[in-house]
Length: 359
Image (cartoon, rainbow, N blue to C red):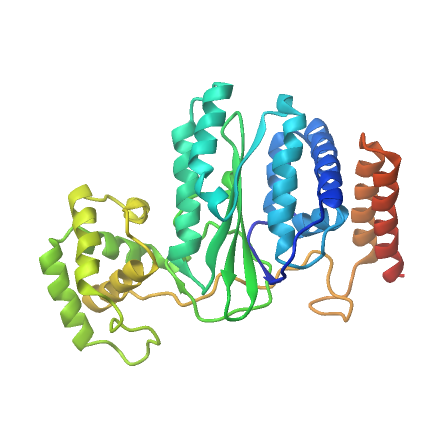
């Protein structure tokens, strides 16, 4: 069940009442403490990177089982709850809205306080993960939540969420550092979601040559590149649903000047250039395709991935043995948790009701 990837969720309004959030903080801290105690903090990061485990964790804490708020509220509870156990050396930076913008500052402060020497590296990874899901994977979702979970030894995971206000959907992105071989080539190992559509995917496994061509173009003088774009505009193939017509060449040149001055060496450095957002990358990718003939991937990285099957037999029937094993494992964790009898009783009752529905 250890996967990383994406989850699509319906967008819901409202917030958790204070009485519930306080209990979520307590229960989250104890469960994570027990997992870390039994399996180590690296396993906690693996659990967070699994969209199925994260969803079950949110249910266990008593929050809405499928809404977008499960991401922001659960991570908020985790961030506050873990403060109870500083000895774990497990930290959460970032959050929703303006709080997400403070992620680099929070990482730096934590590293300074704890004497962690690789703060700059972690900040770079945090920024790059956000830039990729917000601009390099153009799926119609704009990020509004970003949390970076890390340990004292430099291991890390990312949970962030984007908004599609037209379809009233939120998409959650999961990352796990130990499984990322290269940040710019299919960093999501698996995906969980129901909604797919044509997506400009600049980190698809087929995009290596395209990325190299984009970097090559970025090393051209901005005036020359602008001329190449004008030529590309004239010969744009009809097959694409995205065109260069909405690109502001002057604004594009401003960003290109920054890339040219920095003499970017690879796609990762190109993403780090200030102003290299979705429109800039799209324009550069389309130009690279026309000038160098490198194919663009419009494959949405989201695809079906289920842990226990479906009640109607799709994509496969529910395996009760595996399902019961999952429930028993959670029961064991909760029975060992150092929480009040009320919280433990409520959690076990929720699990029992879930099991009854399957029998």
